[in-house]
Every structure is written in C-alpha cells, then in structure tokens.
Length: 559
Image 1: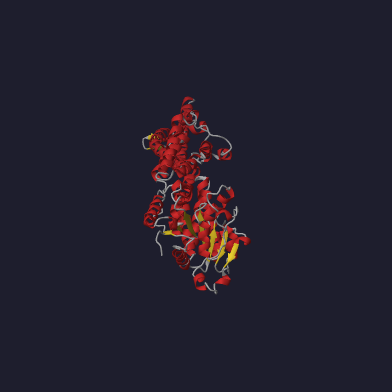
Image 2 (image 1 turned 45 degrees about the vertical axis):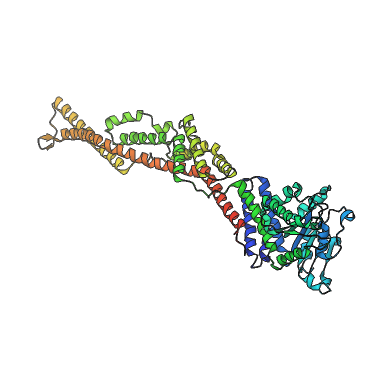
C-alpha cells in the first residue's frame, strides 16, 4: 500500500492534493486500527484507501458513469438512448453475460482506466470518430464520459451480482434505473440505495417507462420515489422521469450527466464519499471520544501500590534500623558498644546488605523481602484497573479493551522486576558519614586515655604495695594525671555516646528517606516500563488514529 500511496503522491495535481491527504489519513487510521478494531472495518478502510489511491493514478479527464438496474427496468434501453446507438441488447435479446458494456467519449488516456475497471476490449465502444460527425456537438457534451451498462443486479446469476457490486464501488456517478411497477422493490433499496446513503452526491435515479403511466399520475409517482429515497437517507438525489423507448426525458438526463462531467469534480466527489463513509465506519466501531492522557494522580497511586507490594517500606525501615545499629556501634562507648555486634543486621536478613560482595550478587540472587500479600496484590490490580479506566474514559469499547490489555500485558513480570530492583539497589549503609568515623576515632582515643590512666593507677598501687620508691605523678591542679585520664576517658566517652544517639537517629532517618526516594524512583521506572508506557502507546495510537480519521473525513463543505 505504501508504494501505491507514493505513486499517488507523485501523480497528484494541486486540485487533488486534498484527496491525497485524505487517502493517506484513511490508510494511516486503518494501519493503526489493525488488531485494535474489528478486522472487517479495518479491511474495508484499507481497501477503500487502496482503491482511491489507484483511482488517483488514472485519468482525471474521464468520468465513469454506471447505469444500473433490475431486469426489465429498461436499463439497457436507457444506456442505448444515451449513447444514440444500439450497443446493449434489451429484453429477451440481452445476452446472459456477467460483463459490463462500456461506451467511451474520448478514448485518449482511457485505456488504463478501462483496464482498472476490468472491461474487456470486446465490450468497449469509443465515440472518437463521431465527435466531429453529424451529432458531433451533441457527443462533445459527453466528451470524457465512460458510460457503463451493468448486468442486472437482480439476476439469478451470481456472477452478475458480483460484477454489479464491483463496479458500483468503482463508478464516479451511479444512475439507478427503476421500473414504475417495481420502484419500491426492497431488493434495490435494501441492497444498494440505503447502504449508499453517504453517496447521495454521486447518484441519480431514473424512473423509466414513464410513458406507461397515465399523465395525471406521473408527478405523484415521482414524488413517491423521492419519498422512498428520503427514507433511504438520500433526499438530495435527483429523480428523472423518462421513457427511453420514446425519448421522453432522455435529453434532461443526458444534460445532467454532461453538466456533472463538465464540472470535472465527479471523481473527487465519489472519492470523498468513499473516504468519508469508510472513515465513518471506523469511527462508528472505534468511537469518537476526545484523546486522553494519563493523570499523574493515577500514576502516583499505582506507584504507591507497587512500592508497598515490593516491600519498599520494609526495606526503608530495615535501612533505618541498620544505620542506627552500625552508626551506634561506631559512636557508642567502646566498652559496651560491642554488644551491638550481637544484634542481627536487618538488611542481612533481607539479603540487602550491598557492600562490595552484595553488589557482586545483585541481580543473581533473590532478596528475602516478605512476599506480596493478597491485600497488596489486590491493591495493585485495583490501581492498574483504575489507571486504565481513567485513561480510556470516553473512548470506544475496542480502544477501552486495547488500553486494558496494554495495562495488564506485562503484569506477570512485575514481581521479578521489583525484586530485582530492590536487590540491585545500592543502599549505601556500608558508607557511614565522616562525622561517625571522627567520633569513633575520638572514642578510641578516650578509651585509650582511660585505659592508660587506669594502668598508671594500678602501677602506682603496685609500687606502693611493694614499698618501692614512689613514681613521679604529674598533677593537673588538685587531681593526679592518671586519675584525670581515667575519669575523663570514661565520662567523656559515655557523654559523647549519649550525645551521638540523637545524631545517629537523625542520620538514620535521613539515610532512610534517601533510600525511600531512590527505591521509589526505581519503582517508578518499573511502573513506567511495564504499565504506563504500554498504556501511553495505546493512547498515542488513539490520538494519531483520531487525527488521521479527521483528515480522512475532511470538510463537509462543497466548492
């Protein structure tokens, strides 16, 4: 199709550029709708786009006018009256053929068009030699017309039905011939006229054999035909009362066709009607709601539910406890702080102690974060559903289903991805702040001083007990230096440990908050990849689809 469209673009004239854009719009809308909207509507739209693109490549100087009708309606006699020749057999002499007959006024450039129409050469007649003849002026009025006499649409031959249906889709102007005895026949109204309600601008209706109707009843019969057409959704279609056999009204019909052909816009009108109808069918099945975007509130709710299900609060609490424990051991009074080493590290229990060894294991081993509870899974499902429902509000049912499928398509991967995110996170608990290291140094200096003072005092006691000469003992004011070292080392160490408790608590809360933010960013990335992005793709597809449909529908104004 892209090759056909490219060829069509190159061959577009300035006047047909708008049609080309509409063809592209319908093609784009159909491509996006593939797999999202019902296949029948998508295939129909694609076929219409391909047909329109193919027609744009062919002669713009010729208008295809199809004469269609039921058996006995006088369709072929109408065709002969318009051509001025006995080209189609009528009545019992009409051959049982599934081929249409074509009469061409001005064959230059019409060969490719006739080939596209599928009219065999033996069923073609050209009027080139007659344009300058006795009826030259009359024939020149129809210069550029390709007049088709279609098989009977009510024929018992299936091939006739197929040929009529095929050419009805290709003709630029459709002329339906009705019989006064059967003009209300449901066969033509239900099968052709009503379904073509969108194509009123490219249709005309002929009430033939009007000579068989009393003169006083003719006008009321024509009014009745117009009433039936209005019921079919075709109130604007012109109705011609003629008698092909006696020539009544034939000139008016011929003049109408000549006027339409001279305006050089019948092909455009037909293509516009086809594009508008196909786009309308896509819009009918897909809905015409305004494009939507994801609300941040819904995304935030989903991320909160995922964070809870992934165990982020558990990890954050473990980080705070672990930092308290590690920093407490580092800043506590060394004599008693070793007791803290007997307490298990919460992060080690969760397999989240990511020092250098932990980083090597990240991504290869699962964490021991508690499994998601049924309540947490239910909340995640609820948030995903709420996000999808909000994103698809006002869209047609197929698009709502497409958004819901996108939102849940990768939910089975959530558990492993979230666990991997937690396992790979660098929680930084093995990197204590600089002040902690400084306090630990001070504490060891103080405990060293206390031990030194204590050892000094013990040495003095031993010397005195052995009645050895006294050792020199420096004084600091009234207090001996060994005593000062012991008391200061102990008291200052304990006091420093007590003061640092508040700092340790603040550090633990700060580190926990940083980890919470880090893990929630990671959860955000997982939610974005597995839920938000697939839904956004569908919403963007819908937006592009709607824009393409609007181009295909075009303006309803007529120039």
